Length: 121
Image 1 (cartoon, rainbow, N blue to C red):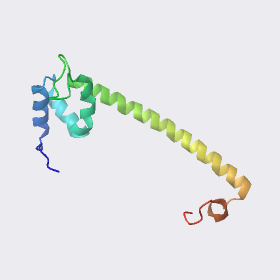
Image 2: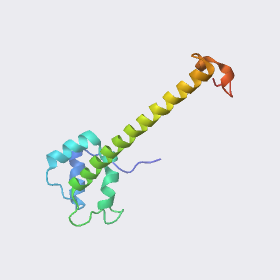
Image 3: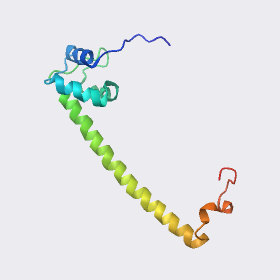
Image 4: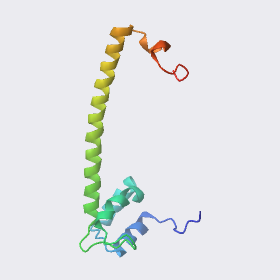
């Protein structure tokens, strides 16, 4: 597979975004943000601000900070959801451990008679 795009510095990426119509009011903050997040991860959050996919021109008034805010919201939501999953996982595992311990004894996890596939045990 032949790659046709060349590597760009963060400064070049910011210039490219501005040339496509994205408003970046503080380039230093934008550079700092992209150093921490990376353009390739952030690019998906820029898509709703585009007029069209090719050549990735941005809607009038589209701002870098709008996409950055969307990224931060998504990160916060992801942390909240995964935190909830962790609570549910721990509760389910605790329930299973207690149930199996009461039914099969404290060493149930080493009893290969309790599994369907002894080779995968």
